[in-house]
Length: 613
Image 1 (cartoon, helix red, strand yellow):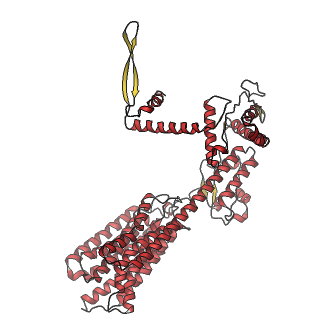
Image 2 (spheres, helix red, strand yellow):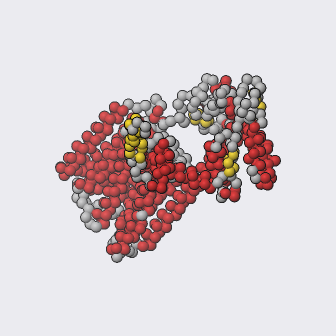
Image 3 (tube, one colour):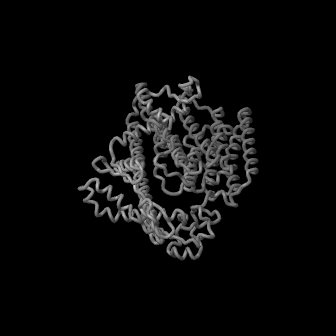
């Protein structure tokens, strides 16, 4: 099968690889350094000069929003609108803080609850959620149910302590109207929403690593925001909150980290589609985090039980049931993925067997079409085309590429059909034909398979009635000459062959029956063991499976494993034994021996034989 190659297109790699995305790193570094210096100076003055706190806090927050705007203009991502929305969220967030500070610092007025600042704060969370959801949409294109379930598990697990420690107490505070109570609960709910979208952004496992430093900065800023928002709510609930303290550094880190995330050139990857690994099991680190997340609910219940205040048992039960259902769905998805992987492997095996036995071009094309139809299924529009050598000549025959439909040669596109013009891409894969020296072997295997298939139908009853006659008949069947085009290969060791080819074909047969096996996989393993024993006995031999073959194989594997461990642990000892001439009584040489002192006595004889080998 010919391969089609072209210059990298939009489907070949990251969006940042094109000339439009090839950004100089030096201007970005200068802007990032200037942003960090500005925030550092403003923070020092903010902490040391109380009179400047209100304007400097606005400067720090607006500097983060300005950095996001500058990063979008400099780096030019493929989809800039999520970053614009995040910048708008930063503006509304700092606007609420500035309003509060101005009213208290310059007007000496106590802010009512709710106030215009609360409107700005509440508008911030939908903007943050919209921007993060836009990054998720463009970064992880397509449906990814396992990653979504993982994100929901993390969110539900972390939302439980937020509810128990913050939301539930807010519902029991006396003297609040329903509007005040609803707004108080809306703040931690907004934090949980942002947490869910952050988890969704991080849960897929990309093929080529993460999104670079921009993703890490975005994560640092978001986690800091959520942590200090929750700490602020707890301190306010207990009457311990004070403004203009070192706790403000959390929001300063948030503003700065988001601004740096937008200024770094790797931010373009956050709006470019990234392929991810569709593995059956999640990465080991995520498995540990998922296990820890599912233990949060029992830990909260245990803590309340030890303190004798288990009044949140109904809420904990609901969250535990939700986590249980999410985990069950995740496991069900893994089972379904395993079944699909097994079906795919079986389809590939059948395709391999079909291609081995295919000789003519039509047979090869039919095998390829059948394999592709099985793998893609009836719902995916596709076409399979086997190209000739002349079409492959100007192309790279050693690479498999995913190309846009428009990059195909006109004659190939015409052969594929005009109804496929709307397809997003074409996967072209090379198929290397056997070289001239390998072709007789391929034809011989195909001829032997056809002969056995034709003879086996007449041997079905004979195999059950005559027992050993089947093995002898198989060897006799393969001993007859094979006609391979213009050449002939005989099964007799010294039989002269026609044309210019001289060779001999011998068969070794391994036999296993359903009487010794429980399923088809075990039957094939037993037949392989019997075939190995037949080959070890010499040419033109057959062996029937015996249980001792399997036990012998297990002992051999165990011995090899012990030998490998002994070599790694330096357990062998080198000893020299003199060789003495009995007649003269003189030492004529030495024999080097390898001893294995730690090996069990009952197995030293086998170990000695293995060491000699």
